[in-house]
Picture 1: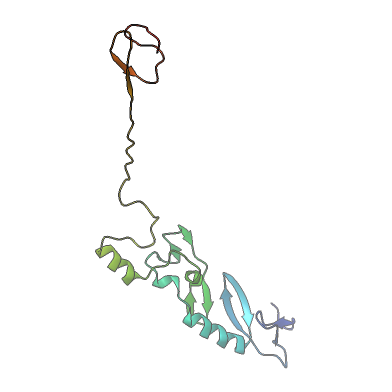
Picture 2: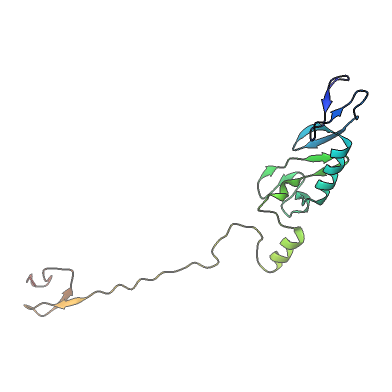
Length: 152
C-alpha cells in the first residue's frame, strides 16, 4: 500500500494511516499479509497464544505435517509464528502422549486396523439318504442314486 491510500484494519475495519488513524501492525494470517490496528493486534496475540499449535504435535516437522503429508499455513503475529491448524486437526497428538502410547505398543491416531483376523467357520451339514434299490448312501440333494441310477 502506498502512503496516503485509505488503509483499514483487516479485522475491525478501523481507519489506519494518515493524520488521524493508527499506523497499524503487519500480521500474516493464513498465509496472507494484512494490516491490523493495535487493539486487534493485542486480541490476536492473546487468541493465538492460547491455541494448540502444530509445533506441539508429534507429526510436525518444519512447517510440514507428516501425517497429512502437506505444508502448513503459517500465521505470524509480531515475532511469533503459529501453525494453528492443530485446533481442527483430528490427527493432533502431543509428542509425550505419542511416546507413552508407543511404549505401550499402541500407535496414536493411526488408521484403525483389526488387531486379530477374525476367522468365520461355517458348519456345513450334508444329509445322506439310503438308496431303496442298492442300499448305498448318497447326498440328499441328488435325485438319482449315483451308484445304481435308481430314483427316489
